[in-house]
Image (cartoon, rainbow, N blue to C red):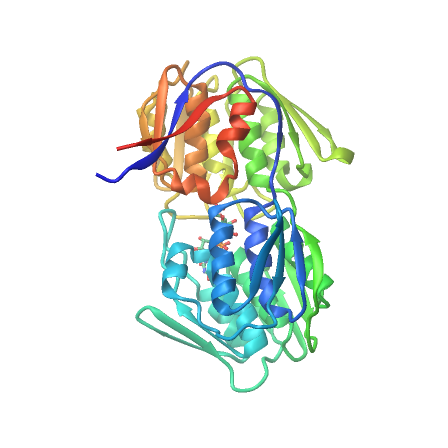
Length: 425
Ligand code: EPZ
């Protein structure tokens, strides 16, 4: 039988101390892909140590970019030597987010080939809006069975594109494709996430002409070429939210460092509504959270930014399982993002779902159990529950967690959590 790694957690007391948040996974991935657009050296700082980042580096190296670590969280990238526009199927299978390399390849080399990224546990994850954008710029997308080829005979030509849904990935791919297109591109109903703003600021430092990132209308004026630059990735707002929620769920007192409060306003607002204490020290990118009694219940609806982030829904649900009353969640972004419900109920939670709605009746205490991470944010929710429950919790399929949380065991141990990564047969 092959060995597998699990997390062994003994529920205990409140989390206390401080945690330093890493760079944002969902900013590092598109910014790494954007390096394909440049022909000069790029230095990235604040790059998180994550499995997904390793995969994106593998994609860049496969294309012919030189990528080397020049420090714990810094990379030097040189994409002048790119010699193929084909992203291998197995890398796309490993991480569907690799698809954001298509826009940069198409923009610089006028072609991009890969496998159409499949769905995942949380949803079908279609790419129709990405293709709509590429075709609006004059490219042709050929999709058969699994392979997908996007090509353009001449230049890409700027155009006006309306996104039926403010898709993060489609906004990123189209914005990157437009940077070297001829003329002006307007993206209407664009995603407004902080990671879009970070990508736009990185591209602008490379010489791109982009206005309106962070609003629903992004305007890109195509330029001839993009140069090198140095850039620091913004902090990971979802990692920060996860540690804030864990602190409050264990009735602890934790100082979160390297966090931008405005990026997680909905989570902060809800925690305050529920009776937690949240103190923002904006000038130092610090947030202090604490709670010393059961929190009041609340209701959330996930929405595109600046609404409540779907990526914090599972973690928030975990907190709701031990609130003093009934809470409700409506998940409007993904069609299947409640797989953590069954796992939390194994720990004594009282959650019922109907379609995209969940009702959570607070219980006095959760108890340890053998549970399974079903996606990276569900995994984080189970870690929080395990740290709060009585007894021992064993979490399997923790490769999901490793995709989006760097040094999770070290960070929680430093906060007083009894959590270990062990290998079992
Ligand atoms: C990004 O995924 C994030 N991933 C996700 O984080 C995050 O949950 C999501 O944005 C929403 O905020 C990365 O940034 C790597 P979308 P993305 O395109 O770009 C529909 C995590 O936990 N849609 O905004 O794939 C789609 O079906 C991950 O870190 C189309 O219909 O998200 C979904 O319902 C999970 N057609 C909705 O938009 C398209 O062409 C949101 O998808 C594209 C998307």
